[in-house]
Length: 137
Image 1 (cartoon, rainbow, N blue to C red):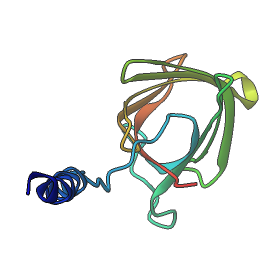
Image 2: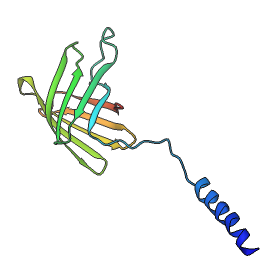
Image 3: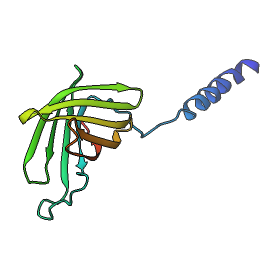
Image 4: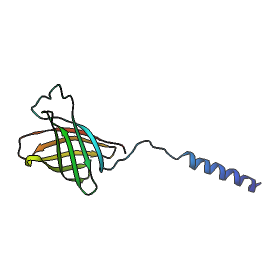
């Protein structure tokens, strides 16, 4: 009789273990990848004909970063430089044409966002904010 109960116990225990496993739909993204978002320019009203000022990052594993952003003058600006991540603190230093250098800071969230983003021209001539979301790949 005891031997007949053994298969029932084994089936009951295995059903319990398999039914308790959790499935999660949340994703965790690395900082490396392609990012898209928007930016603002402090003390400047965005021209209505431009709409939202787009901002894009391509963050590479070798600590290089490439950025592309629409300016309030309607021109697209390209920068390249290096980035670091200390916990959730993202920081990048990028440079573009004409010797313009920008410092970028933001808070990285592994769910795929860069929030509280701030950009500043290293010579103090311009600044603003940005928000980014990692593009799914």
